[in-house]
Image (cartoon, rainbow, N blue to C red; front, side, top):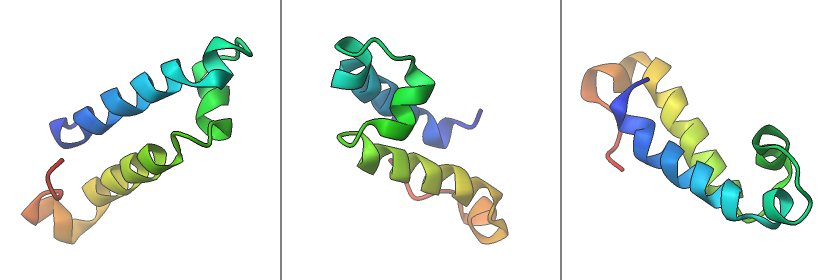
Length: 66
């Protein structure tokens, strides 16, 4: 895993663990990642970061910092 997205991943996992879906409803992280509305922004940012790793233009320039 690249280090440029690791901070976003840690924040996303922390958000999911603190979400109502995980704590109250006792669902697993994978299910909560699809359902948790409060983590939608972090999920989109992480997806954009991972997509940027595959884009040839950003592979040379690097991902925009986190």
